[in-house]
Image (cartoon, rainbow over all chains, first blue to last red; front, side, top):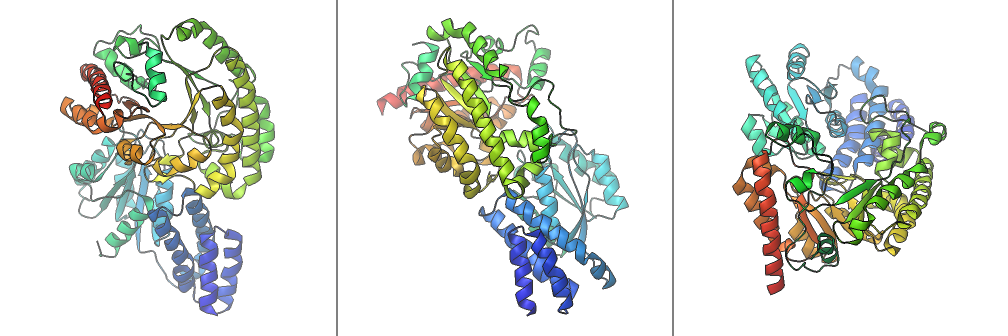
Length: 215
Length: 338
C-alpha cells in the first residue's frame, strides 16, 4: 500500500499534476506513512527523476517547472507535519543573479532543483550586489552561495563576491557555486569559486554533495 | 561581384567569386560597445547603419515588424507578463498586431529598393516567432508554464500572430523580395532546447506551417534566430520548412563544422566565438582557423555569434574585420580547389 501511493505521488509529480499530488498526500498520511517518508520517497524521489531527465536532455524547462510546482505545493502541505516531527533541511543556500544582470529563469530552475534535494533556499532575486550575498550568508547562516550570470559584462561580479567573502572572513565557511551562459570551469578556477556546474540539476547534485560531505 | 550577389551565392550553397560576405549580422550594435568605441575614437555622429561601412564591413539593411503598438502596456518588471490569461489577452488586443507595422517596413524598403535592385546590399527582416512572441505577452516564466496550463490560449495567440504576419508580409512583397528573414525565437539555451519536440510539434509547428510557405514562395530564405545550443532542434526546424539558423553560440557548445557534416543543406550565420575578441588577436585567428572547414562549404556566413562585446578594443575589432575578409577569401580559394 505505502509503496504504491508513494510511487503515485512521484509519478504524478513528474507529470506536473499538482492537484493529484495534493489529493494523494492526505491519503498517504491517513495510511500512516510518516511525513518524512512521503517527502523523501514521494516528492523528492519524483523530483530526482525529473532532475536526472533534465540533466540527460530528455525533460525540458516547462516539465521541470510544473514538476517543481507540484513538489512545492506538496511540500507545503507536509510542512506542519515535518516541523512537528523535527525534520530539518540538509542545509541552506542563498542564491541570486549577480549585479547588473536581470535574467532569472536559470536561477529559478536552480532554486527549484536545490529545493528538490531538500535544501532550504533564500532567493535574493536578480541584480544582487556582492555585499548582499555576503550579508545574507552571514545573517542566515548559509553554507552555500549560488551565483548566476547570463552576460559577459556581469560575470566579473562573481569574482567580487568571492573577494568579499574572503574580506568578510567567511570564505572557509561557505561554498561558492557559479553557473550561467558565459561562465565555465576555467572561469570558476580563475576567480577562486568552488564549483561551476553546467545545468540546474548538476548544481543541485553538487550542492547536496557539499552539504553531506560527499564532494 | 556585388555585395548582394555574394549573399545570394552563399545562400545557394555556392561560393562567391572573391570572398564570403563580411558582416556583423546583428545590425543593432550593442550600445555599450559603441559607447566604449566612441571613447576610443569612433565618430559620435555615425548613424545606426553607418557603423558597418566605417569598419569596412559589407552593408546590409534589416527591418523589424512591430507586433505591439507604441502605447502597449509594459511589464511591471523585466520579463514580466502583460497578460496572464485569456481575459487579459482579450483586453490587450487593441494594443497588439498594429496594421501600420507592415506599411512602415514597406515604406522603408521602398526607399532602399534602387540600391537593392542594383545589388549594393541585401535586405532582410525580422519577426517575432511563435516561441518569443507569447513570451513577451505572458512573461518569461508564465510562458513556460503556459504549455501545460493554458494550451488553448497559446494556440490562439499563435493563430492571431500568423494571421497578422501574413497580412504584413503582403505589404512588403509588393515592394521587393528581401533576401532572408529571421524569426526571433531564443528558444534554446546552453544545454539545448527550452521545450520538448512534442511541445514544438503541438504548438510551434502549425504556426510555422502557416507562415513559412508564404515567405519561401517569394524566394526569401527563412532563418531562426536563437541564442544557445540550437543543434538538437535543427531536424525539428527542418520539418517546419526552416532553412537556416543563427547565431550558433560557441560558448553554448555549438560546433558549426559538426553541424555542417550532419546538415549539408542548412544555412548558418554566425558561429564566431565572441569571447575570443576579448582575449587577443591570436585567439581570433585561432577561431577563424576553427571555422574554415565550414566556411569552405558554402551556405555559411561567418559572423560574431551574438554581438561584439564592449571589452573588445576598437583597434582589435578593425583587425577582426580584416581577418574576416582574409579568411573569407581563403575559404573561397580552398573551397574551389576542393
